[in-house]
Image (cartoon, rainbow, N blue to C red; front, side, top):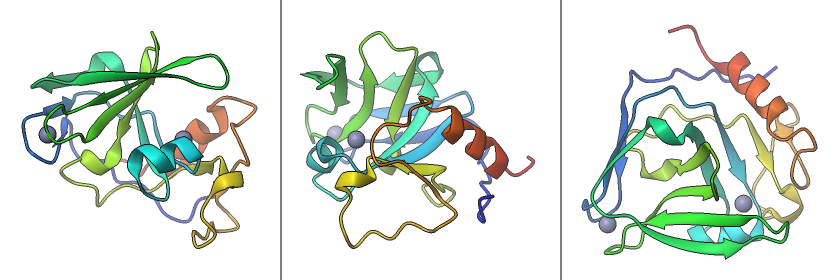
Length: 160
Ligand SMILES: [Zn+2]
Ligand SMILES: [Zn+2]
């Protein structure tokens, strides 16, 4: 069992890029929040890990221009990164055509409520990041997709 519970703020969740030209609203409850320690997340965040808040594409309303950068993953999947063309902040990552996308959670106006359901790609995590013994953690991609992460997230959600 996770020790910390998640108190989801009232919808919509709002956020934006650093310069303010891109603003967004999330109108549906996020499906899960997790951290990715893969080397690509380390590179595109220029930091230790990526913060992924998984939401339905149709639940995101964007104001302002997002530019797209694409990359072919080792798996052969085309990955999309949407960013503000002025300040360069990444807002959304997705697999091409996917209905569920990852919002880069550090762009939320209020990040205080975020607690990860787990960690993926810990094989490449920075040594100074400590993961608790009761936290869900995967050396690479979870075999079950995101089923266990989703289940843990639902356990962590406090009643509204
Ligand atoms: Zn910007
Ligand atoms: Zn990653």
